[in-house]
Image 1 (cartoon, rainbow, N blue to C red):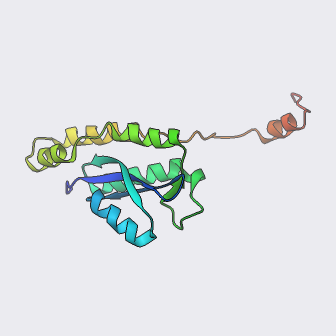
Image 2 (cartoon, rainbow, N blue to C red):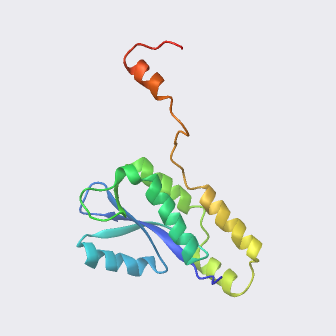
Image 3 (cartoon, rainbow, N blue to C red):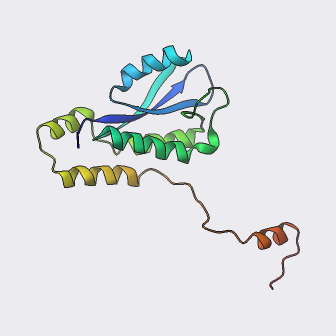
Length: 155
């Protein structure tokens, strides 16, 4: 496996009230310029979380996209733009606070100061802090229907 730090980032479109982009890149500041050109917006980089590999960053990005899937922005095409509240932004930024600094991570990876198990532990820790959607395994549909109609009775 190739260890090359990649970041999952959160950018805000400063021309809108609540449009945010979640993506990943090995150079988030350069990506900000690309987003400006690509979407014709005024993006501000708000938060960055560094992970040891591109695969890990892509997977973390996907987890955030799933978590915010109900909040996709109507203002931008694509799957990476979301209309988020401040508390949702704060949740992402809190996750970023668990990230190592990129220079430290890069040095530790390239100098061999982290074993594979330490890298794996770091990655698992970062994934643990990504919130998950609450989903029901099964729904008792007839009870929901009866409750909604005020006709609840046990069989």
